[in-house]
Length: 189
Image 1 (cartoon, rainbow, N blue to C red):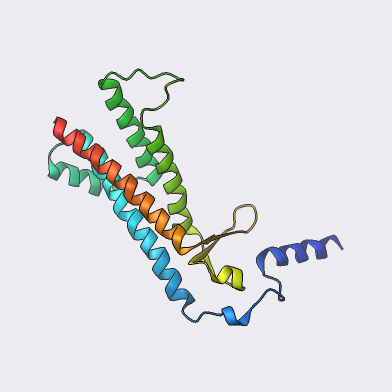
Image 2 (cartoon, rainbow, N blue to C red; image 1 turned 90 degrees about the vertical axis):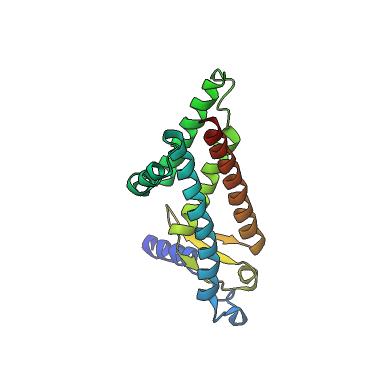
């Protein structure tokens, strides 16, 4: 009896109810659309990550050949989170050199940027690692893409086209901030 309830619960979590299924929602181009949306997000994050690498490399060398060497040998072996924590340390050290006195009350001088990088990394990981799911009813059909997280229990994440644009805009804004911090370093050398 208990085993049957567990199986029924698992079935409900993984599968939409048959009454909710709407055959009019079947989309023959579902895979193409999800590849396009996922690819667009991943492409923006890939370029953004390269900008972070440039900021880190600029901290150690003004020579472009040295920076490229660092990117080829070191950065391609680092996770996004490793790069984010490197940026955090670099920006804190710069602020200290400029007279910032760290304290628990003051926090990190670039806390907003660090929080944004953490958020963007979370979104990046979702698009990079979560499998896509196909809409099965009219409510889900209005979304650009659906992703499924399996940690602990299935969790569906649906993104509208507007949310996709917001993610890209947030990535672009963070990218501009990173580029400005890179230029600031290069002008001080």
